[in-house]
Length: 213
Ligand code: ADP
Ligand code: ADP
Ligand code: ZN
Image (cartoon, rainbow, N blue to C red):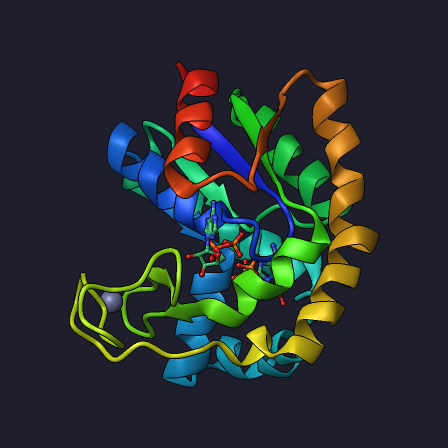
């Protein structure tokens, strides 16, 4: 099964992607996590994308497409995968769908976790992430078992630089300008499903499971 997660920054794509991954035993590929890992390790790629990400912009399409297509060639993707945060522009979506067609493959579901902008800001300010394994928490709705510590790997949690209130505004603008227009592309192809992302995490997951079957 191949799934694309859609939704504004902070809508809960990553949170739901991890739950789907656990239930269906397929990997999650998060371009944001890949970029952050490279930034943390100070790789060439990390240095190339850092300023863009910290300003709330988007990494160029060609670079992102090449990175994802390479990753999708891995053995662990052969039974399916969940894309979290990719595609993020109309050209990326077109390139991805062409990549699938070339491989005689198809996308099963594009799931839109729909949350209005008003709710996004409080989600972002409470978000804490693990710099080592990428696990995501929220101070109020999804806190770690021990304050400030990752449940999965024990690392000290951090707040993402791009979750600062000023940058969140830029990212929402970027989303509406460049990412949201992708939705019609999936609708035309009959791959689009929407869930109400303002519900509690487990209820959103239930709705997604009903779509996936
Ligand atoms: P969020 O969880 O808020 O949706 P992500 O972790 O997916 O954010 O992405 C963080 C940042 O990484 C984005 O704001 C953007 O700068 C960059 N990024 C991630 N995925 C892509 C992509 N597919 N294309 C371009 N830039 C991307
Ligand atoms: P995205 O990957 O779309 O950027 P995340 O999954 O990282 O979003 O979620 C953003 C923040 O909101 C995190 O702190 C997460 O714990 C929290 N969150 C996720 N889903 C919900 C929900 N249904 N209700 C309230 N908070 C949520
Ligand atoms: Zn961790």
